[in-house]
Image 1 (cartoon, rainbow, N blue to C red):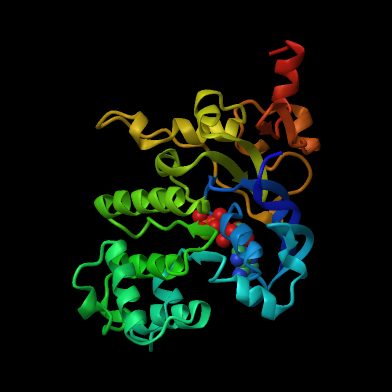
Image 2 (spheres, rainbow, N blue to C red):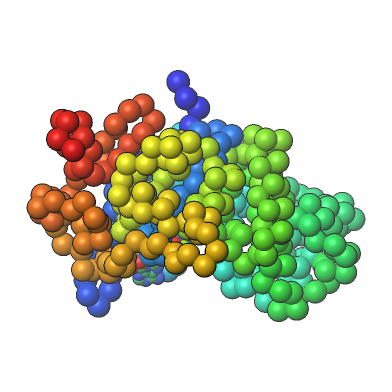
Amino acid sequence: MEDNILEVTDLITSFKGVEGKIKAVDGISFNLKRGKVLGIVGESGCGKSITAMSIMRLVEKQGGLIEAGKVLFEGKDLLKLSDLDMNTIKGNEISMIFQEPMISLNPVLKIGDQIGEILKVHRNVKGNDNKKRVIEMLNLVGIKRADEIINEYPHKLSGGMCQRVMIAMALCCTPKLLIADEPTTALDVTVQAQVLDLINDLKDELNMSVIFITHDLGVICEVADDVMVMYAGNIVEKASIDEIFDNPVHPYTIGLINSRPENFKKGEPLKCIRGKVPKLSDILDGCPFADRCDYVMDKCKKHKPNLQIIKPGHEVRCFRYDLEKEGNL
Ligand SMILES: Nc1ncnc2c1ncn2[C@@H]1O[C@H](COP(=O)(O)OP(=O)(O)OP(=O)(O)O)[C@@H](O)[C@H]1O
Ligand SMILES: [Mg+2]
């Protein structure tokens, strides 16, 4: 049997807005294998961050509600833990790198103290050892002059530097599971590559498991073992990295792959997926991608397809696959 560090089943997270309730995460299920990287991709607003925040039980602070589902971490349902037990796991066994580094750092704490505090609380590392470890961590994420940086406040640092500090904070307790939400967006290309290398190295050295969220398929190629493509709070396709690129089935996945900038020559116009992501409150019956899909059929507008296994390790939510299977495509 496969060793899954995380098993998410039928997770539903909703928000109440002026236009009624919306399901930001609409009943998703997935597993993360120990020591592997699962990439989550999809356009803005498709539910990537809310999936991560739900696992970390952080959605309530944002006004969201986890309505249903299980989040088993090493067999324990995180959704059933007391706040105290959850806080012990957070930052200790599971860490998250947030999308917005500037707002995630405490503006009134010096960089050294922010990292030092985590080591003190979770690992009981104090005094000189604490300082030494903080500097080590900053060096590890490529921050030079770490002995000076520890005395700076976050507003003195660039976005990229703050992101690296966030990564150091997330990794300082060597978590078993790292959730990285767009961790390289604020970084320039060289630092981006360094950070991806670092995550890959740590994954191997520490047998760390990673959920890596990005809208950039190029970045996913660099890090992920498996990929799950999300659209409007749903998983539309799930497979290994090679399978997703060699044999994408969902029209949305195909659109994402075809619109990658690296597929185009200089001066050639970029090909985008037509239309835009629907507002969750506007989605009625049918497949949420129907309005943008080049292959839409009547059925797609009336019924929502189920996620089905099309071969071992490859799942897709699309009626087109049924036609292909029946030989009618
Ligand atoms: N605080 C909130 N209040 C109400 N609705 C929210 C809130 N946060 C998220 N949502 C809803 O949840 C949906 C998913 O948001 P989420 O942040 O998970 O998107 P994302 O995939 O991470 O996008 P991005 O790539 O822009 O980070 C949004 O489209 C929005 O409708
Ligand atoms: Mg997000």
